[in-house]
Structures are given as C-alpha cells and as structure tokens.
Image 1: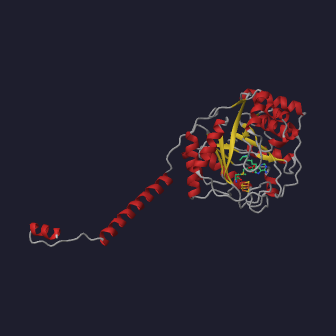
Image 2: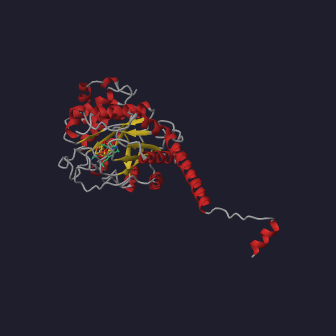
Image 3: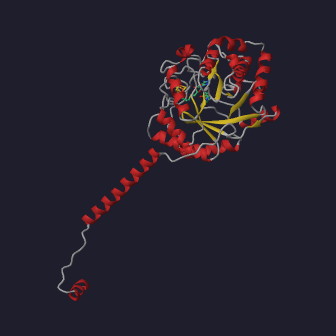
Length: 377
Ligand code: SAM
Ligand code: DTB
Ligand code: SF4
C-alpha cells in the first residue's frame, strides 16, 4: 500500500494530523510495524560537495549567494576527498551517502562528469548513493542512473500555495518536472519538506497532498525542521514545538505506509525523548555526522548512544531495493577517447617537428670504405 486510501483528501489528512497526539502516534506506530522493522533506522551521511554561491533565493537557505550568512562559495570537492569522507561515513555505520550541491540546476559540464565519477565510486563501495543537485533534465537523470545512483533528493518543501512566499526564482512545477525525470529514469525518489517556516498546518497537509496526487509517491520523505540561519529571510522564525514534528512524522507515516520517513534537519534542537517519539511514530532514518550541509547536526557518538538507549539498530544498505549497476559513462568515455586521440596527434606532430628541425646527416659517398675513412677523420 503506497498511499493510504483512508486519508486521500485534504480534509481527511488534516483531521488525522489534528487527532489526539497519543492516538495519532499509536496509529502511526501500528502502521509502521506492519510495513517496516521498527528497530531499524537508516543512518545516512551528507556531504556538501559544492557549497554556497547559489543563484536561487530560497528563504530558508544559508547557501543562497544573495544572503549574508557567512557561508562562502566553494568549488566542487574533488573525487578523492569525497571517497575519503564516504569511507569514514561507512566506518561509522552509514549505509547511505547523500551528496548535495548548491546549484539551481545541473549543467552538462566537467563538474557533472566529476559527480558521475563520485556516484560510480561510492556505489562500488556498497553504499546507497543519493544526490541532491537541483533541477535535472531527463538525460541528466539517465546518466546518473547509469552511473549507479540509487536515489535523488528533490524537495517540494511546502504546499504549492506557500512555496511562492518562500522562493521566487523557480516554480513548484519545475520541482515536479525534475521529480518526474528522476522517476522516469528508474531512480528512487526522495522528496519532502520543511516545517517551521511560518506556514500554516494546511500547508504541511498541502505538501503531503502533492505526493498523494502522484501515480508513484516518493520512496523517501524527509521531514526537516527549519534551521533558522542568521542572514536568511527566515532567521527570526521561532523553533517549532516538539509535538509539531512528531505530528508531521506520524501523519506522513500513516499516509504513505511504504515510504521511509526521514527525520532530517533540526535534530540538534530535539531532545532524545522527542526523537524517540518520532521513531515510535515511524521515522526510519536520520542524517548522521556532525554536519548537515552547512549547519550542525548531532555527533556520531551522541547518535550511537541514542541508538543504544532506544534499542535501535542501523539499517543495512539495499534493504528496500537492489544495488544499481555502475556502468561506464559514454560522454566521459568519448571525452577520454578524444583527449587520447588529441594527445597522440600532438605527440606525432611534435615528433615530425623534431624530425624537420634535425634532418639526418646525409653523407655522399663514392664507396663505403672511403666514407668510413672520411668519417674517422
Ligand atoms: N540545491 C539543491 C536543491 O535546492 O534542491 C540541493 C540542496 S538544498 C540545500 C536541499 C534541501 O535542503 C532543500 O530543499 C531544503 O529542504 C533543505 N534545507 C536547506 N536549508 C535548510 C534549512 N535552513 N533548514 C532546513 N532544511 C533546509
Ligand atoms: C533534506 O531533506 N535535508 C537535507 C538533505 N535533504 C539534502 C539537507 C538539510 C540542509 C540543512 C541546512 C544546511 O545544513 O545547510
Ligand atoms: Fe540553492 Fe538549493 Fe539552497 Fe535553494 S535550497 S538556495 S537551490 S542550494
């Protein structure tokens, strides 16, 4: 059951969200146990492979170039560094690696070729690879799939109505198109939202309704609590109450029984008890490691202690789907072949120039013995 037909309208979902809290949690916990192992929680690590300098105006985001948040624009991280971080994440128990880039959309350039290589290499380490790189064309989605990408994260973030209050540089429909391209390429869809941006409860329900309307809703639904960063338009937003995130997780759990509900940004402000209620209500994943993309997150050790106390176990990779194959990327291979051809042409040209410059000495001889005598003089 991908979507719960009992809650397929705005009104029904709103009534569910507003149910007495413990009844809501009980219902969510019951559904969770039917579809998932309640002790398993996936640890997923985030790497910001391209930080800051983004052209978009997302009101929550510290990486938008137009806000003064102290996040500097950096170049794409090199492949070796990403692999080193991935190894560390795996060693600490993460079974998924999510690589994030502060891009509006992916461009067909060298940076994207490097991302393709990152995907190939991390997949070969036996981790689920996820990327969040902004908008994607269908061809770009296919290239990522071919490289071995397991999931793509692209959040709708709020209801269509509230979206325009938070972002003006792109439309809700642009996001929906990318999700469709990802889906069509056969990549697992990870899409969710943020609560605590000043939206109404109806907007939280509106977000869920957008997924409800899809033929195939996301396999993963991250629920982020806003991390209000100084310098962004949402810097003064007050922190959500703990029961708001519990309600949102529980409602999402019940509405999409098969999806993995991800308790994402904002955990540093949540007590272990609140997080425990979220796991009880169906959260099946966290981001692990002391940093999200640019903001703080609990340390590995803290989470490991929480797992021990709550009796949770880290979920192994590929429990919900097969590991994709990593195939050679034709664009990169063609570029390499072309570069090799150019190199050879250059070498031949260089050799020819040398030959031209240093013409071999020609000795005119009458007979070879005379020639030898002349030479020995
Ligand atoms: N640039 C790409 C994009 O927008 O899709 C990928 C990176 S972007 C940082 C990924 C997601 O991070 C956003 O969609 C949003 O849900 C989340 N995010 C960004 N800033 C946040 C904040 N301050 N608090 C909570 N979530 C945030
Ligand atoms: C998601 O929904 N949350 C993560 C991940 N997907 C990419 C990102 C959270 C970012 C929080 C702000 C920051 O650290 O810059
Ligand atoms: Fe750019 Fe993504 Fe941040 Fe928006 S959320 S400003 S697109 S990095």
